[in-house]
Length: 117
Image 1: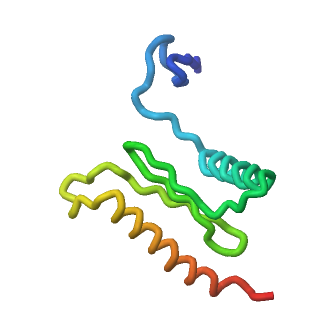
Image 2: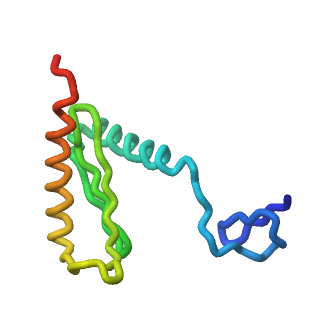
């Protein structure tokens, strides 16, 4: 098998210069994201800042990272693309409020499984 790299993509078994239109699957993507968030949280601690959570937005998605339980965080990704035939077109504020409310409700549910010391 030959491998060619063009424009940052690696294709296997294709002649040089031909790029596959299918995105490459990264089996370690969740671990990489987790490590990035952990490093950010540690940096906040070194700066004597208390990290509670954040949201990151672009034209395609909104990512919410929030404290979940006493020792965990949760990340929720919401698509900003309108789904064809998919109900109401919610405003950004309504999506944010609904997502944060769902995190809050889930937090109270999961906290009941954490033993109290």
